[in-house]
Length: 186
Image (cartoon, rainbow, N blue to C red; front, side):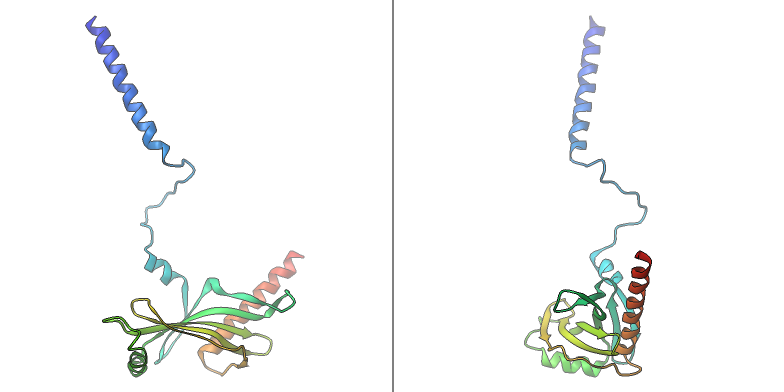
């Protein structure tokens, strides 16, 4: 009789353990798994990885968002592969410029915050070698947006030996790469 009671208690314990395990596994999707020995990147690391540095000079560090390169859609709905849009970022390093910007945006800066960088949406016409800045957003060191300027689209020639010239080369490569894939898709 003792053996029967012990066996019954043992079965109850095993049943309870299996039920508890089933409840905890219910919440996870068996198809949602990953193998990684590396820790997941932080939001700051993900943000840093999206930018590719193009030029550094005494004024600042210029980079572009690699995922932002796209062709402009014309008025008739057809994509114009000569017009390339790209988001660029300038992190200012020139102390005089930073002083001037901090003075200009003093009323918009939080305590212990300083003007730090700007993001610009630029359009490049690869065929004409012209460009313009569609929109510019100025940010502080704590990520607050200090100003937004939206400009008329008025293309001007790309000056030599500038950040704009380096970006024009990148946009030209994007156009050439898109033409290569279009040809091979036919």
